[in-house]
Image (cartoon, rainbow, N blue to C red; front, side):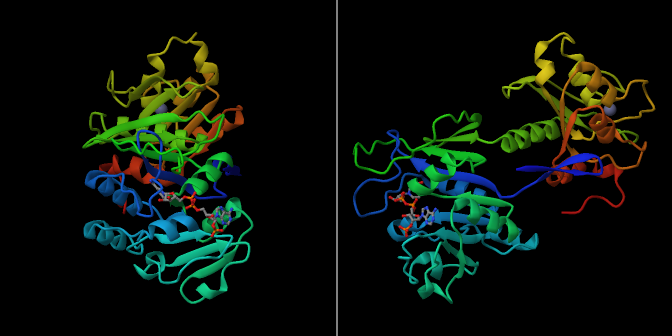
Length: 375
Ligand SMILES: NC(=O)c1ccc[n+]([C@@H]2O[C@H](COP(=O)([O-])OP(=O)(O)OC[C@H]3O[C@@H](n4cnc5c(N)ncnc54)[C@H](OP(=O)(O)O)[C@@H]3O)[C@@H](O)[C@H]2O)c1
Ligand SMILES: [Zn+2]
């Protein structure tokens, strides 16, 4: 993840897709047993969850050994999810991607034969016998694979194993998020393939779900994933604002350097004019030492001018000594012509815009916008 200066703002520039690892393990951490049969660890509810995650991704990657051993289909099962993708201008299924060094892949496997989506096979020397059934791409390592996928427009990649690929992406710091489903059973075989992580990573637990006994843990692995998580929380707060025809509905959350929430707020929370950032800041002791390394997430760019009060949110953030601001939606010129991002950036505050979440923030304010937001 790189930062690029653009009109005085820092905009995230991705050199690889947002990469989400997904796997199911037994209580004793196994991804499979040692029988020749594929071990089904998930239940129906969890398969449906996986289907939903797939539907939100542009591509699905598995290692060649998973193609050989499990012969997965890697398509979206639910017809409504497929139709919704088509309605959004996407192919019904995500791209299918695999990597191989040996080239030992059977063109008759379901990876290649099921579904209409494009199939991509990466390797140092991609296997020529697959010419015609897949797009073959030379790539030296997984970093090059991800860079090539990004260049092909893949923004969100789901990686569904196996053990080697998951471990390699974790070890190389190439993963943003991990969805770990723990099935209520033991494999009890020391020789079974296990889920292996990388020492030194300290993921943030974002969600725990119990799906009929399969426990799904969602971990955030990268700073980008943490930023997106908290920005979504801020957008969620914006939905709590009392309605107004003359002001935006905005949500804000202040988070410390270890990823823990300090406070949150939303527009018009405590009085008719209070802004989201102002409301979140009002709940913190100005002497709180955590502010000096905190990030404030706001669904809308912090204001630099306001009609209602003398101090803008940009000024309040600076006064609080918060060194980092992340927002989704650049303030449109509707009520005032704001330049909060530039103003903060010029005073040394790191300002990050995550523009692909702007639509979510805009939707909360659809009644103010002409034309209303599309999509
Ligand atoms: N429980 C779950 O959620 C889940 C999900 C998926 C898989 N699994 C299980 O995981 C097991 C398979 O895992 P695995 O570790 O054996 O295999 P894998 O991770 O699926 O695939 C490893 C293979 O990928 C290729 N590869 C890896 N890194 C590469 C690189 N940098 N460049 C080119 N090729 C590369 C190599 O293929 P070549 O050998 O062709 O060179 C390598 O042998 C199976 O038992 C499967 O059932 C479980
Ligand atoms: Zn404001």
